[in-house]
Every structure is written in C-alpha cells, then in structure tokens.
Image (tube, rainbow, N blue to C red):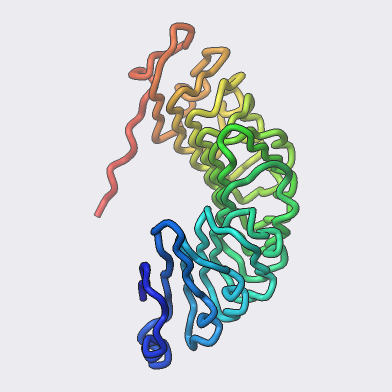
Length: 275
C-alpha cells in the first residue's frame, strides 16, 4: 500500500487484517509535511515498511516487530532503536538515526548505510548472515575503515560509494566476497584483491589514482574488471588484465599516454546472456 501525502485512515487496516497487504510505503515530499506513523505497530501482517520524506517521528517503526524489510529516507531525522526488529533481513537507513542499534540483529542479510561520516565498520556489528553491504559516504568528507569485516563471514557483495578508504587491511577476512564495487571511493591500492580467493567482479569507478593493478595478476577467480570514470593507474601497466585468460569481461573506459595498452586492445565485452 502506498500513502503519498495522505494520512492513515482506520479502514485501510482491513487490507492488512485480511492478508491482502504486507507492505507499506508512506511519506510526503511537500515542504513542511508531517506524516504520523503511530498507527504502524498495530498493523497485522506488516512485513515491509518504506519511509519516505516527511515522517514526523520514525520511532514507531521500531515497534513493528515482524518487519523483514525496512527502508528509511536518507533525510530522515530523529532516532530509531532498531535492536528489537529480530526478524529484519533487509535494512536501508541513514547513520544519523542511530544505525548502530542494528548491531545485533540476528537475521540481517542486506544492509545499506547512508550518510557515513567516518570510522570503522565495528559499530554496525557482527552479522553472521549478512551477504550484501552498501556504504554511502559523505561525498567530500566521508572516511571509512574496513576494520570489522571479520565479523561478516558470509559477505558476498560490497559496494562503497564516495568518501576515502583509510584502512583495507582486514577486508580479506571476508573471505567469501565475490563482488566489490568502488564508486567515487578513493583508494590508492587494490592489494586486498590478491587475498580474496573468491572475488569474481571488481568495479573501480572514479576511485583512484591507483598505484598499480599488479595484485590482479593471475587472480584465480576474477572474471570481470571494470575501470571507469577518472580512475587512473599510476604505473600504466595493464598487463595484469591483458595477460589473465580467466577474465571474460574487461572494461577500461579511458586510456592514458603512459598505459601499456589502449582501451581497445584491453577490452573484452561481457558475454551475451543465453536464454
């Protein structure tokens, strides 16, 4: 059910009582909007809750104990204690509302942290079932240390947007990682890739300058590499890509005069999906 710039009416609850509805999207984009969420904890069968703009107080969401999915707008204000949402599997929320209270959620499989300012991952907690992690840093001032990935033994996908990576030494502790996507996340080294034996996909977009691609040479599982935007390889050596026969897809968006290969020489188009 979608309620956009509309307050809750008691008769709407009948659709949840009957089991016709299990999800609710609510909010209002109008300036000064003040949407009341106090009715939500009493809704039966509520499994999915998405909070848009204009929510007066997000607190009642914490009392919706059967939620398996919760998305909170990146501009939401106030505080939300998430520790009681024991069935929650997917969470998208800004750090500013108290995202650290989700540290001990036992069922969490997917987490997106918005508005990351600085620090390591430990405040987010150790999640033994987490498979997907997305961190969106503040564009110019955000700093992220990947200390804490040892507490994410099932992590398969890591996406990091913007900010600066200050420490990647512990990243290989997430030994099941299959995909890393760095978009605007500044780092000078991809040394961590050499110690990720299951890594298959690597995206480096607007994230350099990178010292070297040498850590990718002969990688045993890597099959896809994308180097896009203004990412520059300082030593210019693209042979770790060109000489790796396991790489089925190579995308280099821009060349440079000091590169060993041109983008055309290095590219390998993605395989066409079969039906």
